[in-house]
Image (tube, rainbow, N blue to C red; front, side):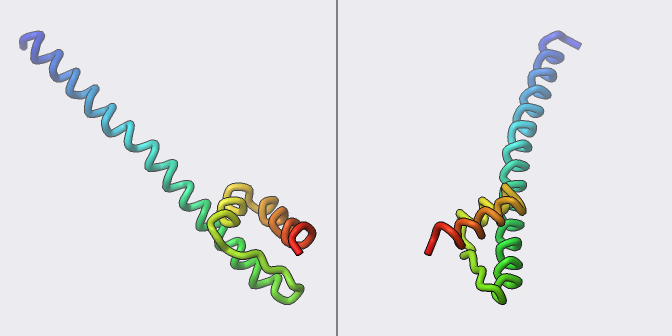
Amino acid sequence: MSPIIIISIFVGLIFILLAFGATKKPLRIVGQSMMKLLIGALLLFFLNLAGSKIGIHVPINFATSVVSGFLGIPGVLALVAIQRFILP
C-alpha cells in the first residue's frame, strides 16, 4: 500500500471521530438539562398539590423550574421561602 492511501485513511478516521465525538457531548448536555427542567416542573407540581392545603403555591414557569431542577429540594425550599417571606 502506498503511504498516501494510509495517510488519507488515517485523516478520514480522525475526521469521522472528531465529527461524531463533537456532536455527542453537546447533545448529552442538552438532554440532561431538559431532563432536569422536567424534574423541576414535576417537583413544583407535587409541591403545589401537597401544599394547597396549607396555602403554599409556587407558580410553575421556566425560571422556577430551572431553580428547582438544578438545585433540587433545597431549590424548592428556597422558592417556598421566597414566596412566603419576600413576596406578599
